[in-house]
Length: 370
Image (tube, rainbow, N blue to C red):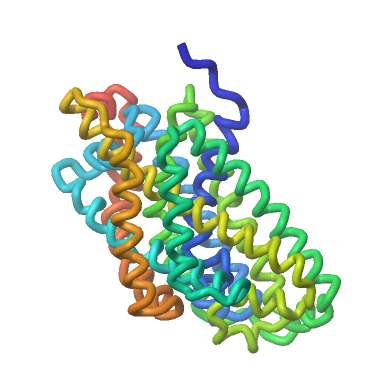
């Protein structure tokens, strides 16, 4: 008999897992924030991030409640409910998005290994693959604990980082916000940024097991949006002290750390970034493993434990090749934008129409479609 879920597992854990799934796609290094939000200026970027947060919370709330009612705890079951026979359309897009995210992660890990140790970038990418694969040997409970611990460390390091930047060059940050009006395109940027990141929400569905009633699913979804964006907002504010200089930097985090002139903190920060890379890889690949495991269960056979890291290694090796062939900046600029509208059409639109209709008609209808 399993023990009852804690308050933390019901209300905060889904938000931390969601943040772990989205952060290493780019905003752990700051590059993603520069690409999407900086063109609208300091204030426009913050407005765009607010739009993304609201979209995330709305989609998370409906997704969590629909998954809870239908007991759809992996993305295959969830999209069979939402898209019927067209469920595989999400799987195709999810796999492509995961390749892009893993490629970004591999490039970021390689840059960190090179900047800290002078090692070949490929070794940093391979180290990230090894760490992620090792975590996937363990079950859901161990993965949840790892994600919570590493995200907690990330929050600590990020807010120390921001506080330090404010103390070191707060006058420049204030001048950056005061020097430019709200730019154009912030709403579109917020929707676009939210659009491809919502595709990571199904990676959080294993947390839905902890919900016992509608109020818990809706509250967890509403909280998950701000929890996913809060470190990004803090980082964005810190970047505004050098927002013109930082626009062309592949690793804005490294640029700002150099301005602080504190090698020991650079190590602490880069460790946090490396952990976020592993976090995101674990969250996204665990979703694939859960989908494959359920397919094995349908055949009444257990999924071999060794298959979990084997799948992870295969996906990440393909992604690392893409990272070395294309490069970090181009991956973020081109890869994400291409997939944004795809997920808005095949996920957000059906969810906020057919999904809401299912919930409105009552839980029995959703249960019948499982």
